[in-house]
Image (cartoon, rainbow, N blue to C red; front, side, top):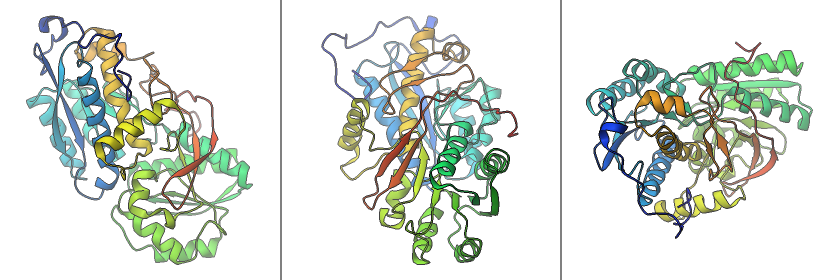
Length: 397
């Protein structure tokens, strides 16, 4: 079976089943016929609008992997935990999954705040996290595979595109108030000022869950930036874009580029509220390639015709497949062995077309610019070549 496709008659239904004593030497939850993994996302709270798609995509991938015989002949069982949009809860649940449940890997987190909260737990307990979200970079861990983009693959290339296409010189930076938007805007500011020779005319942050953007909108109107650069996350997006439209900030007169709005958020915002604005992502549901068409078909068959797939949802779908490939390459579920086996792994059935794990545990990926339509789908206007991940770019730290 391909990632989202159909079972090939030439493939065996079940892989060989090597002895548990050979493939599990560190006491993980692996038996002769099952392997247990964890899922740790926000199913409740302000981040649920963004993380629900990740939960669904990971479960779809695991279902497909089980349908083709599992991993090293073992069916995958899932223990689902809710981080509840609360970072200490993420750390607590991560410890439970690794220490009590002894899961073989965890697919989870969305915000950098949640990832930072669990990272010490994964490194201390030697677990393996597959983290799906585009993020600010400036991090690398043996215990994490980053399936989303780091900053140079999203922020820098996206700013280069908008500066060139719109001849933009002035930028207004907006973000939710936590580590990812603040660090991303720090990187964006350095790139705008030092590389693009532009000017940042405003920079504002608001607490997660914030819903009153009237004061910000007045400041934007006063400054009249060439580009509004938005990194608002979670449920705040709904209020932000609706109030922007109500105040007359629409794409016929203003340019907005966001790195935090995917199809998942647009489902809540309403496509009519951000028509003509741009997102910089590596994946859009509208991508036209056979891998993605099969993935979209399988996702909608499982979750309904009205379900949508955003960038992080697709990156979450990659996690179980990359873990499967690493385990099979290592011939073991042991964390140290799959960490060592991961660099160089290719996944040619990825809906985004192709991914490969770099020695720094990030993925080579493309940048795509999508322009939003009223139907909640984005038309892809630009696609880069594969960009090598560089989580520690010189001059941006």
